[in-house]
Length: 257
Ligand code: IPD
Ligand code: CA
Ligand code: CA
Ligand code: CA
Image (cartoon, rainbow, N blue to C red; front, side, top):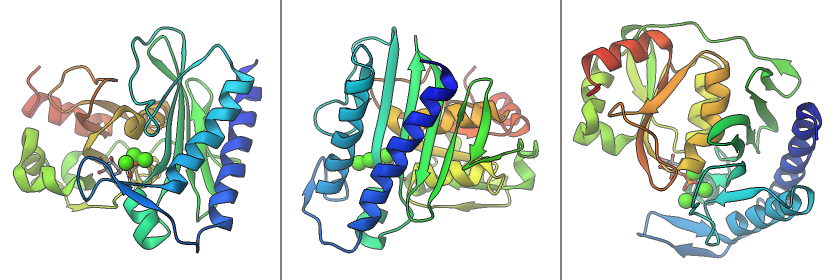
């Protein structure tokens, strides 16, 4: 299938599933605890993942899938085509606020990000694009954000990493103009694509960073593990994405590389 046809199809799937969420948004949902009491999954997370999975498996039966819920969170190797799904990013926001959450889907080929999709469900905005095709909000092409230096912008930050100064997070943040915490990696990426924040530092699983990284990179932003090493598809990583200027300063001053 051609790239633009693939994009169109995946966008239609995600919007359809997002419409399903909005239709049910005021209902009460069953919720279960995962690793700790702040790590929850609702029946809607699982439902959304299953709906997307069914579409991917029917249309692309050869492709692999890595997804947060329902036992699909491990992958043996990265060769070939791999879809990475976060059915609801910002589950706590979804559950307690009924907004500020998003669906994220990415396509990787042989470990390289090709396509990314982030659907801000309650605002009905889909961010999508990929390698050499640009980045769009619905039908509008986004320009690259300004290449702002660390000292001149706001940063999206994981609060725990800030408090504990993990991998110099607090030192980096204190050089900026201020920090923001949105409770959803997807929403942080959206602010980043628009240049409303100039970097995002967090502790992320691959489905949290996959789609956003593809879109950010296509707009000239850079991302890596916060210690300068490789990002892992097996586990969470301390992650940073930001403008080239900011990444240069962080690399030179704080990364062990
Ligand atoms: C979480 C959110 C949160 C980030 C966590 C993620 P989930 O994803 O993106 O903002 O701090 O690290 O796990 O569990 O709501 O999909
Ligand atoms: Ca989760
Ligand atoms: Ca997530
Ligand atoms: Ca999730």
